[in-house]
Image: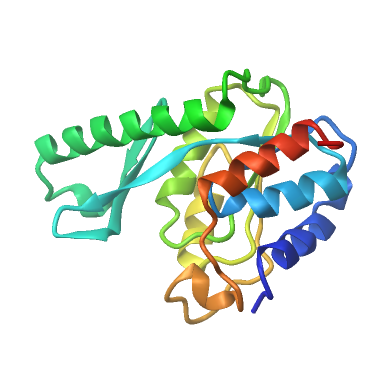
Length: 211
């Protein structure tokens, strides 16, 4: 178990030391991945970027993911095969509108970092099904990076297997792969929700260290 996201970020930073001061970019997934991403970016002296995604919930059980959406792409799991295409289309449209609003709020007219030709280290506080992470990887691949590394503190074995099977993932770093996995939060003593204000503050601190 991790004490909190800061401790998890520091542990991942140790695993990623070989990328310190290289042509790499830490790409954090809001909201929970941003405190880890910030910690790693500071320890390894690498720029911090964010990438937005949100799961598509099952119509009868919104917490159960049947896919995920980014600003540019979407991915569906096998569980979506019996779901109405109209429902999925409407959800993608709704989620993308939400992500666009969040994008404007987080970036505040700042231009995203150039990712082409870079080593991308994609960070989150943990993954469950892996659908959100895979949707993000697919989108990031379109940016033509040099390589994509996924760094997460905890995930179930099946999700790690899924990530490693992706043709776009060059390396997966995950220190904790438990036999019994119920939810990401069960592996943190402190798993308090990260809000939008904290995300914006950390992004601002990464861009303006003296702020």
